[in-house]
Each structure stands twice: as C-alpha cells, then as structure tokens.
Amino acid sequence: MSKTKVEWKPGNMLYPLPAVMVSCGSTPEEYNIITISWTGTINTNPPMVYISVRPERHSYGIIKKNMEFVINLTTEKLVKAADFNGVKSGKDINKFEESFLTPIPARKINTVIIGESPVNIECKVTQIIPLGSHDMFIAEVVGIDVDEKYIDPEKNTLRLDKANLIAYSHGFYYLLGKRLGKFGYSVMKHPR
Amino acid sequence: MSKTKVEWKPGNMLYPLPAVMVSCGSTPEEYNIITISWTGTINTNPPMVYISVRPERHSYGIIKKNMEFVINLTTEKLVKAADFNGVKSGKDINKFEESFLTPIPARKINTVIIGESPVNIECKVTQIIPLGSHDMFIAEVVGIDVDEKYIDPEKNTLRLDKANLIAYSHGFYYLLGKRLGKFGYSVMKHPR
Image (tube, rainbow over all chains, first blue to last red; front, side, top):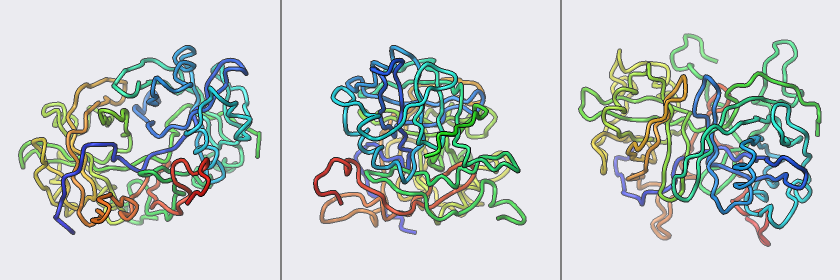
C-alpha cells in the first residue's frame, strides 16, 4: 500500500456510476431522452431513485411539468446512443429518431420507455431539491419493464448479468468486466 | 431488438452502481466502515454526494452525530474487504482491524480515511431526508485525497482508469472491463 496521499481539488470523483438514458415527455412532440450519470438508488423500501438535472437542459422543463420519467439501462450496444443523447439537445433534434431508438408507451406513467433497453424503470417524482448547478428529482419507482430475453423462465429470475451493462467512470464508458464475487461471499463457507 | 417487454415487480433495478466503503467516527473507539451502493453524485457545482443508510446500521448514529463521513473508492484488491464491511456490523467488531485497513486522519474533517483506497472523498452532511427503509444523507464534498501513484506528474491529471475500480450490479461485484468510449466520442470527428 502507498500511504502517500495527495490533496486534490474538491470535485466529482465518485466512480464508477451508471450512465442511463432517461426518457420523458407526455406527447410525441415532447418525447425526449437525456443521458445521466448523476443518478442512483436512494431507498430500498419503497424503491426510490433520483436523477440530478441542470435547469438549462431541455428535459428539465419536461420532467418538471409532467413529474414523471423513465430510467432506461444502457448496454454495450447502446453506448453510442447514450453518449449522443448526453451531448446533444432535444431542443434541436428528435433524439429517438436521430439515435434510432424506439419509444414504447410506459405501463404505469404517461410517457415512453426505450424499447432497446434491457430494463426500464418507471418513476414518479415526489420532490425536487435545488442544489446549485443541478436540481435533484427524487422519485418513486412505480413500474419496471424487462426484456424477456433476460428472464430465466425456470427460476423466474432476472439475468441482468447477461445484459452487457455499461458504467461511466471519470470521463469514459466501460463494459462491466470480470466478476469478482457475490454479495456476502467474504463470509460464506463455500463462496461462488 | 426484442420488443417483448415483461412487467416486473417495482424494485431496486438501477445498475451498475459503485460499492464504496464509507468511513466515519471522530475517535478511534468510534471509527467504523460501512459499504454502500446507495450512493451517487447529486450536484456538480458545488460538488455534492449522498449516501443512503438504514437507521439500524451501526454507522447511522455515528454519521448523524458527527455529520461527517468519507467515501473511499474500492478496487479489485479491496473487494473482499468491501463485501465484509457490508455484511458485518461495527457493533461487534473493529472493522479497520478485521479487514486489515489503515485509518489515516482526514484533512478537512474530524474522521479517518482508508489508506488503501485510491481516492477518499471527505464529506460534510448538509441535510438528512428520511425516505422509508433508509435515510438519505446529503453532503458537500469538502476535500479529496488521492494516492499519488495515480497522478500523472507531467499533466497533473488523475489516472483513475489505472485504479482497477469495481462496480456492483444486481448482487455481484465486477471489475470495470473494456473501455468503450470517451464522453462526447459519438460526435467527435476523430474519436479515440
């Protein structure tokens, strides 16, 4: 171990993070996508998540008006679309069309999910907290859609490990790599 | 693409996430570590993060009393310690000793960082929001310590890509794998 620690400027250094595509909008004209890494799970029961969005972003007003959005998980196949929808603005283009993604009506809320995403997390906003550059949208998970090809029909479990999910770390997108252990493996007698 | 979407029970399905070791406590008797995946960046400027903690956890009372904690990033070498400190309780054991980790005084707050971690994010709690099973601790990043071996001395940049960071996804720890692109690469003329 190196005990030599250097002081660094306070900043955003918590990694790796997800890089999800958030879909929103209640009408076809309004449908939009924004890619977000400032997102996470904040509560287990009830299931709750957040996204932090700059007020300047096109999706900000759409989500604030409708108080609903969908978190669409991203995969190796979707990384270019995710990057594109993070740097472009829906003010200028139709993001579903430009990034070749399919809007499908959500089940529980009045917006669309991204058909190509393996998991879609439908959310209702319960609180908006302004923090500075970003506002945090706190939301409850009200529905989840999964691509049936990731469901193990015998065990009725979700094989998210088969989905080739990506992470975002300090400016780069990565595929998840080597599996290092299962939660709790350090105290199991026969860990797998 | 499979357009066949199946409804799934609302739950915690946002992955991959970080799996960080949070250190806390203002005295050696109080020093503790809790591993947390319900964490993320919530604001860019000023830099802010959150951790969500169950009130039953030993660290909960320590953090609430001191209103300070450190997010220590985790690596392939630290994954077993991280898992251990997620399933064991500091009520019963000294986690620094049992997981062979080195407490080093933080720079900006009155607690300790984990010496073996490549990046330590020192945080001051500004708000606690009860959500149900968990309370969300909203915090400002007041200091960052980095292991000097990840600093490129010529460019004075942090090479976090060299740190072998791990992610947590749906019950498993993973090493970050293949690099898929740099932020903005989808619109660059000559992407690397």
